[in-house]
Length: 399
Length: 157
Image 1 (tube, each protein chain N blue to C red):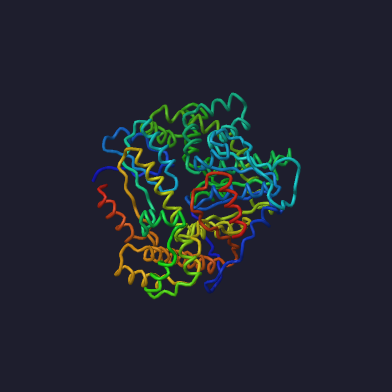
Image 2 (tube, chains in turn yellow, cyan; image 1 turned 60 degrees about the horizontal axis):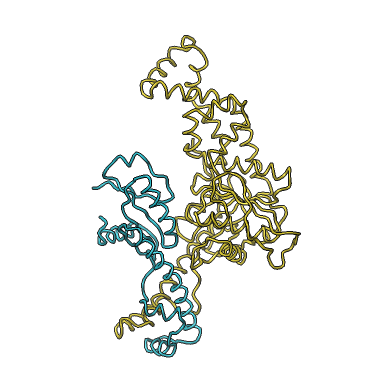
């Protein structure tokens, strides 16, 4: 079921620098209602989401940050180490200097860690009668599917986004939702969610399972009977019965699911949504970023720009790496342990790294010249508290 | 070849592995978040899964020794002798160059301090630890061979 991919990009381009991404303009714009951060794992996506949320809140927005799997200490600093699937207020915020929309009281930011299974359960509970919901929730096949089925996480993140958006519109609780997506290429598979659910539930395999569950054995055609008999032998009767019960019960919910997924999809395409692709200045991460950029463009999702995290800070002065290495080699002949030699090697290492990262970014910009970019220099320490997040927010804005 | 399961501390372990005596869970981490590795070891031990070793990845080059780092942190570097050293090696050591080098050194010292603190934390785990250098050119096939050789040299395989 591979779709034809269209290539997006210029016909020819020279390596160049990308237009600047203005983070403050994005988060201050009252029309921005949802920011979705996507990107491959290990590029600082969760930190970026939290830092964006914090900055927006301290500049006057009412923010909720939905995260998938934050580092433990970061989660603790935001007070969301508990998985209860409900946004919790983050303590310790203060208004930014010159915040445009100074309001009464303290800035408001809630944060939530997604509990995939609970979100799934809530959907089932809201869509089915209590007896039917109980039947589904207790089904072993449902339990396995809801907690480990590939891509359930992506879909559930979008489901939760839809729920919170709906609630925020009704009670004005938030005016900006920042979403951190699961760390994989499949993170964008939620874009397929309506079709995916449909193909899962309309699949031949599922149809086969549904057929015998709907009536006594004599109603079946001989062919289906043969297949289910074979499957009973392989899977065991109990497993098959559980699957049949599950699918039959689930089938009636399917209409609701599909409709909701379609709504979320439309919400994402709307003007109030902004996608940020997060990457690190490494070849693999930027390749993934290119995939995300193309995929979003293809689905006509509003792409706000690229955030390149953890860039090595540019060295001061114009001493080149080659010059530094040559001098370090000369010094080493005289005194192997001299501080000067060590400093020069350090400088050469840093300069080369910075050059390499700049080259990678230029290549990306040449292939995707329309993508505004913010470059965030790496911090020396780990980011695990509000002070760190605030600093990342500043760097994002300076980007 | 022994059966080792290289796993990310964030990933959920496959519990059926605990049945196999030849399985050990090795943890890979970067110097910044060893607290999570500590938590993972405690959880693995709680689940009676054998913990193999801890691999600290992307360790910075150690171009400066402890005395140098201490001097940089305390801001007691003898700038004049540094300048004359640099000049003797043919570098025009103007203010900008020297300030730049020292700023980079301070940044490096901060990261090294963090790594050292984390290294102490790992020692407390009482498991074998291995360190892999950060590859300046990024990882490619040749780089993987270098890392494999490094692990072998350190006695992991």
